[in-house]
Length: 283
Image 1 (cartoon, one colour):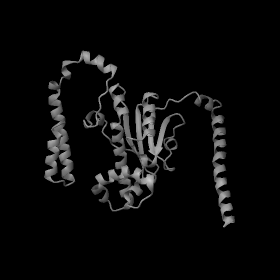
Image 2: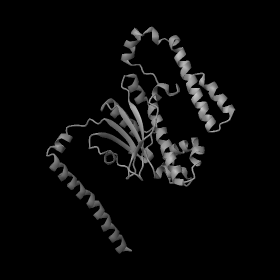
Image 3: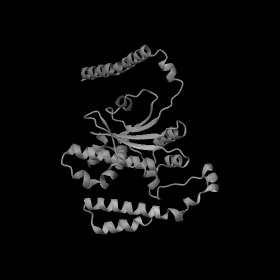
Image 4: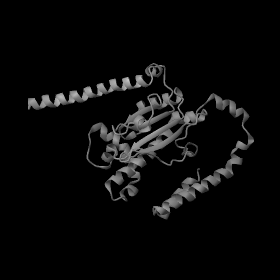
């Protein structure tokens, strides 16, 4: 038994040393290409994107996008979740927007996700992990009929992975830091990506960019900004509620028709359709 432990320990040490040796080769390669590479890198960062991805070792953002250090500001956790009370993530979002002046946020999920697969099962994975995965279970519960319509188990997992990305994009739109940026005139764009591990390609999910303007009023926040106080003194008459009533009504009708068609496709009963129409009157 002791010999086996020693043998395993030696193997682990060799794996560990291999990583450090890889760093030396990396440095040598970069210095050969540009002797001032690391000196330049030490002067600061100006990334154009914030990427919120999964901790899965098969989904390294820089390698997948052929970007260098300093180009993407990265936050990773299990199953790329955007939990409103996650202080770590919120600090990352705030720093990215307010200090790095990033205009694009990407949520990147991936196929074959272990976190998503675990969330679909009823077996406990232990303590904090169960609590964390509850966020995915909420998405699973909401879209269970669609997910279970697939026969292949991998298709079910990949479907939930995509729906999970969409749900996390919505959580970013609801984030007060992002909403404040919009009101200050910094239109932060939020994108959803799905990295397909089996092909290597990243697929951009089709997500409506008008989401922040049409977000449910329950989540929409108003901030007392100095710029707003100045603009309120010069409000154009065309911006009055009366002149915008027709446009709001047309938007409401368009949404109702689109949603009813969707409900019909999903074979939702007329009672639920009527309930949606009643609730849409507040739009």
